[in-house]
Length: 357
Length: 87
Image (cartoon, rainbow over all chains, first blue to last red; front, side, top):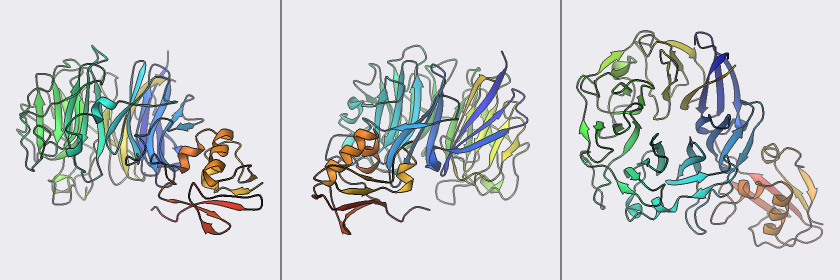
């Protein structure tokens, strides 16, 4: 059956879709969708064929938008996307994570919600909010956000979430109880609650070896080989330990992609204004830059935590959206890149899905 | 019945919703609740989890700023307006 690759591009001014044949060399762009609301993240749910888009509008609050016809028509809901009365209200939905029969959503202020009816209504996963460290979580530059959700492909009750700032938390009982998993992350700021001094920018499970996690933290690039129990630095060959995205190769253990910036306090753009994605094939023991086709001068942009991803084809496609609204694509696992679009609004997220043409 | 005037940016989110209509209710909160009955989800677009009128939404009754408890009577006009913000 014929396939197409669909990119879901969340921007400050709506969701866009880019579609191509599996050759991934000619993209057709549609949008903006979601009434041009800021969309922090969008995902394709392979279980239902729906596109879900998490966002928040300055006037009308948070919502998860939904399209069941690949973007032709949209609905929106935030039913149940609330904390208890009297608690600071939710500003925006930050990400959506379809996981079989469940869809998870992370929100600002940081919390986890889930839907069992395809995103129509939401329920607060209170176990995380009830963790005793919660009063000590601190706002990062974008607020206090739950921005990462990973689900063990072998066990849907085994979850990880990332909070800035509060770090990585793990649940082995479907979200009832949680434990911080930040041992080994070198804290360079104080936290009053032990074990949460980590601004975990983004992390992913190794897709072939899901006991392994790799994490781009504010404090460095880290790997865990023991389900997050301990972390070690893996920065050999990197120009900087600071960045936001972390992308696992869809088919190969130990291969990851990141996009280092020039540090946290000197502009947060590409080192020497020359763009590169870095790749490891040995669990972070060494890294090499991938630059072919990316701008090598004047690249005063960053790539946000949810704005780099891979597709599931072979060879894997890689996609990176920038803070300046450029979208770059590679159809050969990052070895060469081309510019898909140049004038999007700020790109918050990019996800890829392979769907029926 | 009190008359309610809604902003285009809100009505766009609810296919079939009307910008200018009459709603039988005795408070602003009840008015919004009736709107939500007709177009499910509209309450959440205007009211946050406290619950309060969202920070960048303003509601006037006959030109006076109102809250959820503000009373409305037969001849009142309830304007729902987005604040001028954004970028």
